[in-house]
Structures are given as C-alpha cells and as structure tokens.
Image 1 (cartoon, rainbow, N blue to C red):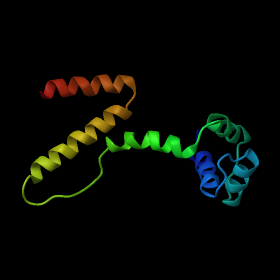
Image 2: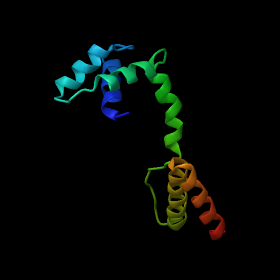
Image 3: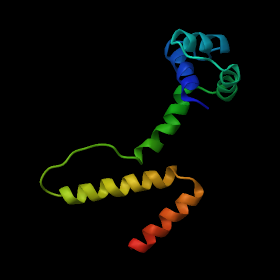
Image 4: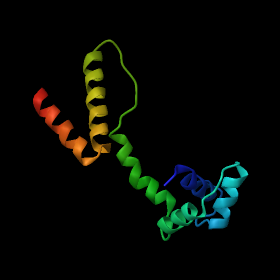
Length: 113
C-alpha cells in the first residue's frame, strides 16, 4: 500500500476526523495534485476500520526504538558507543529483513563470535 494513502488518512485524523471516508481521503490527495486509485483508498478504509490511528501508532512506536538514531558522545567510551550503535543498526536491519535475510544475518553473527 502506498504511503500517500495512509498519509492522507492520518492527515484527516489529525484534522479531527477519527474515521475519514473515501471521499475525504480522495479530496486530500487531489488537493495535493496526487492521482488517486480508488481501490487503494478503499483498502486503507477497510484496513483501518474499527481501529484508532493513535493506538496503532503507539503499538508500532516501540519497534522504531530498536533502530536507534540518537547521537551523543564524548571522549570516554566513544568507541563503545559507536560499537553499540553499529550493533543496534544491525539488529534493526535484521528485524526488518525478509526471513531468508534474517537467517544470513544470524549466521554472520555466529561467525563473528
């Protein structure tokens, strides 16, 4: 599913409509000059039916924590911090990879140990 459809849905939610219609999502996309596929809009509506956007975001938020991203540093422990960031980035990539790639990442990690 293209992110533009979900983005338009979330824009409507932010605007105060917790359950946007196909017409409202289409209007948001068209206002931005975006060509709309009705089947994609219908898919977003169907998948979001009965769900609260803020709850789904809260559930998924924890998954981003594994990807790291913060900076920091100083003189002491700089190498250790870089090593931890590298390990966190590898873990994030492994979690996001398809099943076959996960196996490869696990094998590589075992070889390193």
